[in-house]
Length: 258
Image (cartoon, rainbow, N blue to C red; front, side, top):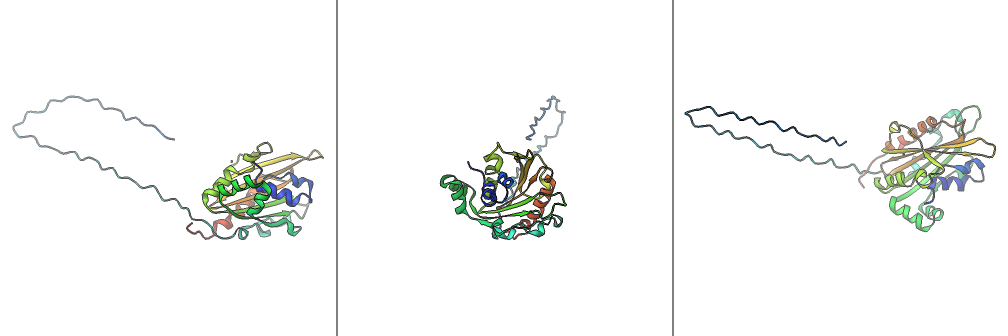
């Protein structure tokens, strides 16, 4: 299976911009046993009165229905949730160098990049609708921050489709030799499901170039935020904080019945 679209897009769009950016990253049943009471026979007392029959009520079992799952989705187009400059720390002075660094990524490009068979398999399994991507370049050398900040936002037809994309079509599952899961508590991000992964490669100078990526599913959307740069420039927490900010746009969106 080819790498997910995150890596495909980055390689296509930024291959001519920087050799480092060609190495992009595209997470009780408790058993009980009732004790059997010991039965002790006690003779009944003698009485001239007829015994009174006492009926023992049989408890009525009440079935509690399972809660109806909330399958509401977001129908707003994906470009409305794309990362913008206001989502990024102002001291890093991130900017978009050229128009090629921001673009829609249609289903036709999935098929073109992955091949007919694998592309159609992905589209059918996930019910992908459309997506956008953007990448920013750091505009100063005076702060410690990723050289690149990347965002890919993808809309799917159903919540199930987004979940399949998250767990089956991610960079660790499709390319485990180059990408590894990051063992972090992702509950604070606010997603329905999240995974984080790391790509780390040595360049020709002997320095490591890394990408931290956080792939978050909310309803029928998947948001991938990634930060890349040399190892001494990129911190996981920096990328996670931006992932939280970007995800809030999705969480404020109106929900509709599918």
